[in-house]
Length: 114
Length: 113
Image (cartoon, rainbow over all chains, first blue to last red; front, top):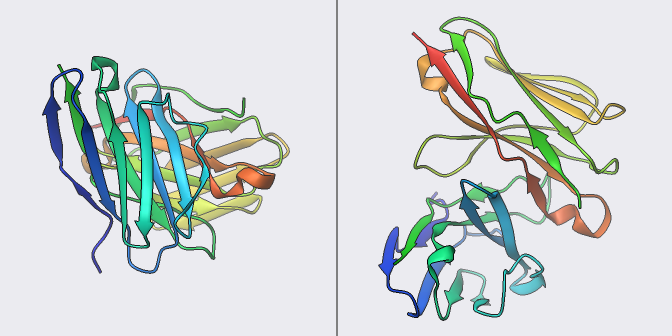
């Protein structure tokens, strides 16, 4: 079984540019989570979806960030315009709707905004 | 603000010793507890979960939970250099937040050959 797939793995962009990160959850998983990880703040939940519906976006830092999940197998996280302080590793994770709620992480996207 | 606290380390142990990693949490209603391992430059990988008071063993790993003290720990027996990584404690919130995991900032473990 393929795990969570994220693309791109690395992204370097200039301040002010739009950045789009992509995620494909594990097949059959109905919850999807976007996290950001930095040395200072650790792993922070940005937003999560349940059955493609955004449930809690209180972790989204500001209006520059938006996320969509048009279907069960695809989600995007967009930053527009990007700023240097957005530099971090962005992880996507998914889980099933039953059981003990463990989440499985993708390999992450390392974003550098110059 | 619901918090999960871990000692950032680094925790250094000699090869073959027992490594003890600790975590406290503030949400008394938390139900499920997870330990993730994260190698440098990699994504978090689930090691164990526990939701009942007491001990749960899986190979060289033992998770311990004490809900009254709001404390969860991970013991690694016969530590190996390959265990060197950052260990993240994660906790589900109570109530409407139970879908979410709140992570500690992690404890960096170094196993010295």
